[in-house]
Length: 431
Image (cartoon, rainbow, N blue to C red; front, side, top):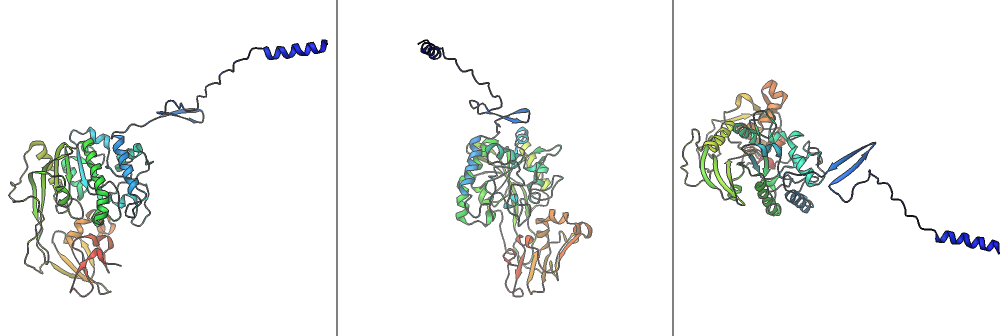
């Protein structure tokens, strides 16, 4: 009985004892604070690094809208993949710090933005920071001219004689970080989506698929970055979409007469526009393969633009006398002449021929006859020719058998397979 009594007391003691509260677990400071998602803590060896959410200059809604638009159309074969929506190119922070804010405008990004060489597979090599987020998109676009910009189109940091950059430099602006120059941005009016082919070669259906949303995105961008001057050099049909108010003609020239080609009139014109309630200034200039290509005095044009903006007084320009401002590329018949026609046995671009307005014609060993305007080809690819070692050394570039493929896009380049009886555009030649 004594044994049973002891066992009972032992069990009673166990079950009647007060329950101890569990001690709280020590706080693991290496784990993220899930109640504060704006801060993420990363344990790197013995050091704890805090990474705060990144603020953007543009609204998240605009950046995300552009990304959503790209994702919705990327299934189409003509959309470059991988790529990203190009709202703009240039240092956004420096641009906004400028007293006068200037942007340039083209139609849509080129597939070349995502390829180092012509036949490369598209990649993000110019956009190493892109992670398909709103923050990384803004960072990537703002760093574009600090990474590997497409200099063949945008020009060199040290200066360019072609495209928008020469005009911008005359105004006191640059895409690049250059001493004594303010920062300009580049944008695309029709779509932020890079395509292959580029805009002019897309079908009407393909353009419409991108244009409706793309144009709205561009207008929203304008409302956020509020440029004082928009510099534009496209077909005039795109200018009409902005319903501009004509103010002044700043520059005028006619093309030289040559055999079989009509005289064309080229202008630079100053407008006022209102884009979704935002009023600003717009300068439109005639273009060819590149912006403002018909004009050799691009820096002087830039000076006229900024002078007119600052003072309202243009320099050495006549009052507008044309009855309609829109049909600026007017053609009229001219008398044909063979005085500027040169027969050769090869393709040639030569320093001593610049400015002569010569039409060169040659027939290769395959019996194909080529002809082109020397100045048209040189002006289009001036930066490329000037960078060639042979051009630097011998002041010329030649090809003994054909017109190089990249040059065939020029308006004046044509070929004939029947001895000159009929001619076709050079870019149609398959070889």
